[in-house]
Picture 1 (cartoon, rainbow, N blue to C red):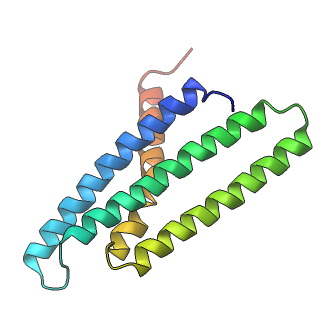
Picture 2 (tube, rainbow, N blue to C red):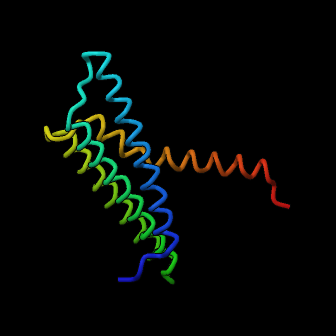
Length: 141
């Protein structure tokens, strides 16, 4: 098994930190809403659902990075494409399975599990937005 590229490690850590920040914000919102209404209950299932969803999301991102790394290092373009497609399918099944566990089992709040899986997309959006702002302020010549 080849070593994980430092770029994959760095980006996975960035995604994990951003996902953790999103998780804290979501739990604070959940907590606040539960204090002002009877429609939402904030209990341990919200935290476990968030943890499960965040774990799945960061794992998915890491596995995607490893798949890209392996595909780039493969000489045969067709083999690289097939390998990447297989990895994509496996990661999708993994996310669906984890989401199903989060929805079916009573130990996880279904909403916090499903929303947490989307956090890396939110992190990527804000990082791209920030980079575009930085580039607009300091254009490279």
